[in-house]
Amino acid sequence: MFTRLSLRLRIFLFFCLLAGGAVALAGGALWFGWSRGADSLPSAPFLTAFLIFAFLNTGLAVAVWLLFDEHVAKPIGALAADLRLRAHSGVDRPVDPQVARYLGDLAPAAQAVSQTLSTSVLDTASKVARETERLKAESERLTALLTEIPVATILLNPSQEIVLYDGQAADVLSQVAQPRLKAPLADYFDPTAFFEAVGTLSDDLPEAAFTLTDPTGVHSYEARVKSLAQDGHVLLIDVQSDPRQPIAPRPLVFDFDLIDPGERTAIKDTKLRDLCFVAFDTETTGLSVEKDDIVQIGAVRVLNGRIVKGERVETYVNPGRPIPPASTRIHHVTDDHVAGAPDIARAGKDLHHFSRNAVLVAHNAPFDIGLLRKTAVQSGVTWDHPVLDTVLLSAVVFGTTEAHSLDALCERLSVTIPPHLRHTALGDAQATGEALVKLIPILESRGFSTFGEVVDATRKHGRLLQDLN
Image (cartoon, rainbow, N blue to C red; front, side):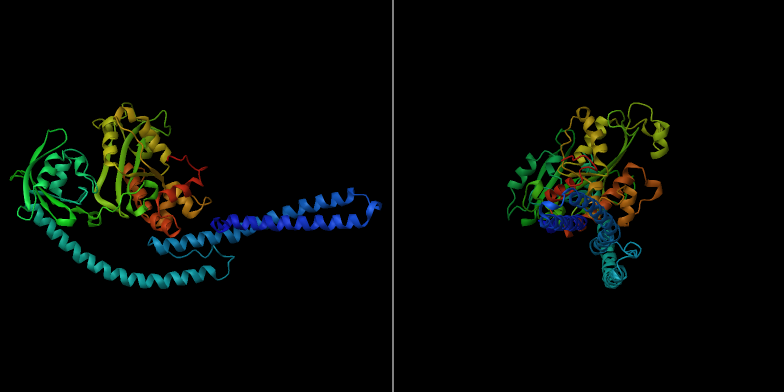
């Protein structure tokens, strides 16, 4: 139990024990001296001496503890956090010797170890980079080939969740909602005909044709399904393109780790790496949840410890009222930007669909999610997603005495926010997502591997922010 307490708290308790022990010993000595004098000595001087000693001793213990906490405990915590950054999040920057200047050679020694390991990592990274470039070239060649074929391709795992889609498939999926990896096929199409076609597949009939329709029945497509044995199915959708229009590149979006859907577990017992996250941010007319409105939404998706390239939400939102000039000076969103934008009912519903079966992640989440929940009735949705707040995650990893603003967190994690994207919804959402990606391995190294364990850890810092779970 004692070992699970933070280092600073353990040191504080140690000094409390010293102070209490000294007071107890002094009290015992004074009592013994007084008792030896029997009734000939008055007790008042002994009691006064004891009280004065207890007061001065406690003050001395507190003063020494404060010095020890400031110059030993805090630097050790900061140095440990720095080393974890280098070990688990790829942050490569020198250890600041001033942080631990009272700890002798500890900081220079940590820097030496870090540099030695970094050299080895860089050698490995250069080999990986060369292989990555080769694979990238092959991927671009495959993308170019698929672009010329008028067939949209979607790969489904055995749970009928999307594992891969090409650009043409993205166009088809976008007719219903934002394309998403790991999304069930039923989020975009009526699955009845699909399952009927799958039921006809056999060794003699490896492919079946059918008509695919969206849930509203507005759009329909001629499609074929092929079995991939234990790996699921590939769905091929015939699409018509205008031959007069130039064909734009259509990159593939995929994550083959999703082929094995794994076992379903309760959210609190699910490992962080197995969760889907949506990091999002809003820009608003002001800083009041009750009185202000959203003018811009940005969001990115995080799967298997990485941001899914190409899956994002970026939209202006018409608040139905003028944007105050003071707010525009911060986020640069003007009335002209939102004039033809969707209202929050439409934009909120789109973000809700994009966030299905995901953990919402935001920096200072109570504000952003409070605005969404305020408009839930208008959007016709319920914002009951599990939530993580990067302010609280930062407190868990780096301690409450550090600064936890988005800028401070990103600087600590070596996440770069281009100046022109700071205080834009998508720019801040991207930064939050990148920070989350770097925080996850550090949290795991600290023993917080499941969602429930992380939430329990953040609740210890509940005085910072409201618990939305």
